[in-house]
Image (cartoon, rainbow, N blue to C red; front, side, top):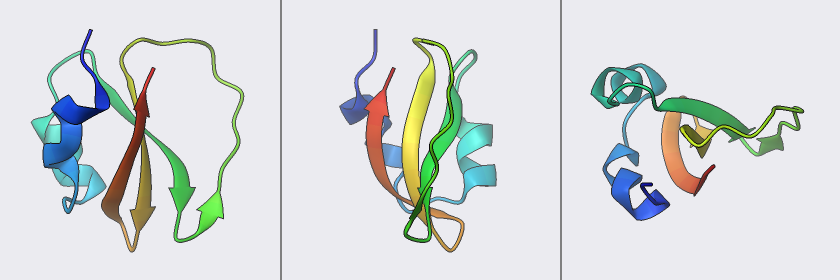
Length: 65
């Protein structure tokens, strides 16, 4: 399984750019956007990349679950 270090290349990219760069089956899940935290109940998925964004740009990779 990949770690968040494997996805550091997404920092500084837009969400749309990142989605195009990701290999299947990985997907982006935004947990913080422009300083606001989003809590969503979502089941375990080993391909979810949890990110924080500001102005539509990924500023941080929080975790890979």
